Image 1 (cartoon, each protein chain N blue to C red):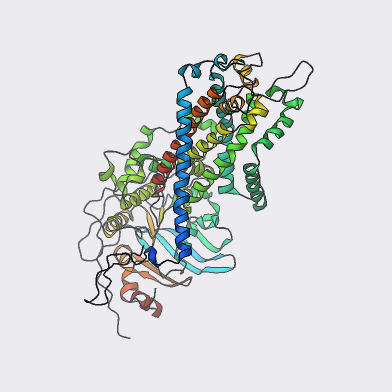
Image 2: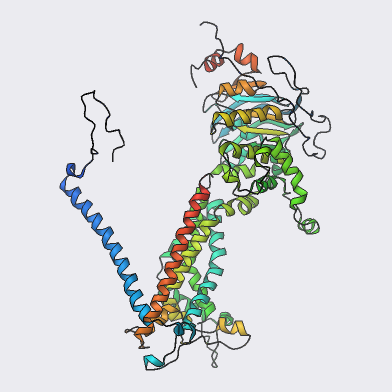
Length: 327
Length: 312
C-alpha cells in the first residue's frame, strides 16, 4: 500500500481517493496468479497443520488411557496385553537431558568463540563449516558413526561389554552424546546471532570501565543473549525428541529401560532403552510391535510435547526482542 | 566578511549547592593535585565562573592517529584539566572521536589503529599504565545510552567490582556484597543527578529507564569507577532537549571533581558547557582556546566559518 495521503493535492479540484492506488486490478495477470498461489499455499499449509494435529488428536485421544502413561511396555503379540509406554517417555526425557547437558555449554562456548574471538580467521572459518557440516549430516549417519566410535574398547565405560569382550556401544550415554550433535548447531546459531546483535558500543562501554574481555562476556554479553540461548536450547530439545534413527541404532530401542547393572543411576545411563519416537516406529503398522493404537496414542503424546516446546520457543524469542529493544 | 555575531548562548551556572562528594580515594594516583573542591563555587555574574581550582590531569602532545595508513588525527597537542570542561568540536570526520577514544586506549581494540606522540595521565605515559587500570582512571560515556541488561544497582556496582582479584584473595573476602557496595553506588548515582528519580527502586531493570535516565546511569557507572578523567562522546546526541539540559547541568557540576572532555556536534552545547574549546578539522587541531575566545573572537578563518554554520 502506498502511504501517501489520498488527498495529496493537485488542487482543490482533485477528489479524495477512497481506494489505494495499488489495487490488484492494476496488476499484470502473472502477478495476480502468483498472488493467488501465495494465498492458496498459505491456506493449504495451515490446513495441513490443522489436519495433522486434529487427526492425531482424535486418534490419540481415543486410544490414550492414563494407564498407558504409567505402565511399562510388555512384549506381547496381542495389543491388549502390551502394556503402556512409561519407559519410552522416561527414555525421551533422559536422552534429551543428556543431549542438552552436553550441547548447551559446548554450543554457547563455540558461539562465543566465533562471535568474540574468531582468530585466526582460517580456524574460525573451519569451525564455522564444521558446525554447518554437523547440522547438515543426516542423523542416521551420525548414529552409525557413533556406533563405530563407541564400540572402541577405550570407550567401553559408556556402555556395556558382552561376555565375549565386545563393546556394545549402545546406551543412553552414547545416544545422548550423539544427540547433542543435533542440538549444538541450533544453539550455536541462535546464540551467535544474538551476540552479533549486541552493538559494539555495549562491549566498549564495559571495556571503558576497565573490564577485561572475559568479564565483559560473562557479565554483560551472556546475560543479554540469555533468551536466545534458551530458545536455541529449546529448538535443540525439539530436534532430539523428534529423532528416531539415533535411538534405533544407538539406544538399542529395547522395549524397557534395561540397566547395565552396577551403581543404580549409572546402570540406567549405560543401559539401553527406547523413546517415544522409536516406540511409535516399532508399534506402527509398519513396525514389529503390532500395536497401532498405542502407536497413535504415543504419537499424540509426542506431538503435544513438541508443540509445547514450540510454544516455549515463541515465548522466549518474543521476550528476547523486548529485552534487546534498547540495547 | 562582516564580523560574526555568535548566537546568544545560555551558560550553565553550577547549581545552587550541588552535593559533590569526594571521589573514592585512588591510592597514590596523584598526591599533588589536591582534593577536589567540595560544593559548587557559585559565583555571581552573568558569565559562569571558572572552577575554583584547575589542575592539569592529562597532556596530549603531538598525537597523531591512523587507521591502517590513513591518518585521522595529525599532530594534536592539548591539555586536559580538572576543574574545567574541554569540548572537542568539529565536523564529522574531523577525528575528534578518534582522539577521544585514544585517551583511554580504546582505539587499540580497532584492528590497524596506530598512534604516535605522547599522552600522559598525571605525568605518566598512558602506555605504561595497565590498560584496565587506565580505563578505570579515564572512563567513558558513549553516544548511545547503553546500560547493561541488569538492575540499576548492578549496572553501577559492575564498575566498582574489582577486576583482578587473585583467587586466594577472593576466597578470603568473598564477592563484595551489596551492603559494602551500596554507599559507593548511591554516591555515583547521586553525582550523575539520577538519584532522586530512582531512589525508591534501585533494583529496577536499567533498560526500563527513559533514554535520558539511561544516559545518566551510564554517567553514574563511569563515575563509579572513580575516574580522574571522564570522556563523553556526544553524550546527548540521542536525547531530547530536556534530558540534554539535565545532563549538561550535571557535566558542569562534575568538572570540579573530575576532568571532563566532551565531543560534541552541537555548538550550542559546547558554548553552554565548555570552558575550553578545541576545534578540529580534517584531523588537525585548528584552534584551541577558552570558550569565549573560540566562539566570540576566533582567530582562524576555518573556525569562523564553522561556528557561523558555513560548513559542518
